[in-house]
Length: 383
Image (cartoon, rainbow, N blue to C red):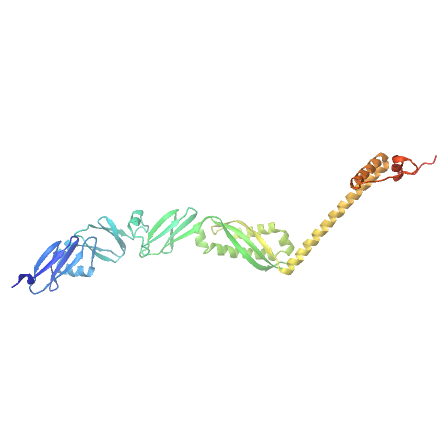
């Protein structure tokens, strides 16, 4: 008989273990090395497993535990979680697995140190910074995170109930078996544009008005509890306010009393948001849009007013100029020397524009006689 054909050779490497079964029943576990097994009837079967930071199928473990509980306790570490806990599995001191409620995992412990850190979810919903660093980044089904900026207010809701206001920073919460929501509200002043809407004035003229409001959330808890959407709510409120204000004014009053209209709108809105946690700092009319034919009429009226004002100013200037000429004439009539000086100024300006001027007084009387005859101030007195 050749003994060589009656033997089975099995090689197990470092970091491995082999389960030796005979006719489907576990006999023993083979460690690293080369093993010679007598198997004349070909009844032995070996299955090699990696055991360094490795898992073992839970179903196989249950079968092995039922047959050989002593061997199962020696080779494996079983981790099971309850309904209200999660577990962080550390292999050789490194966090490797995050287990959610009602899970079971089996790990080889012959070459790996297995430690388990259990977290009770019935207590604080927050995830500590140490636990957050141990959990895999792909944890959306277990943990939710929120970052609250310095200009924001974060409101934490657990199962729909407001729990606390979060300080600026990074926050993480366990969401296993519960609903967690973080509402972030911007506390900086925000501009709300109220677009044009058509309305009628008291004198039945249709126009459209656009407005701008600057609002700020001063009480986040009250604002969330009283208003589902701050901007949409403020938008509608300002629309009602401008409709009421325009309906009680004529077109001329709307166009001329913008400051009074803005003040009325602010008072209207502030009176109705006093308990909402929202503050409106500024509110005013940005633009008034008139229909085409009305705009043309208004432009014509404005143009006519400007023309009339220009004519009035021109007439006033002409009257002042005439009055000044009259005063000058009276002075010249009373002072012949002043008249002669004015004549010389006129001749000087005339000479500057003409190349040559010939003056003839007649009868050889000279320049003085010419000036005397140009203007006669008074009739000659009878001797």
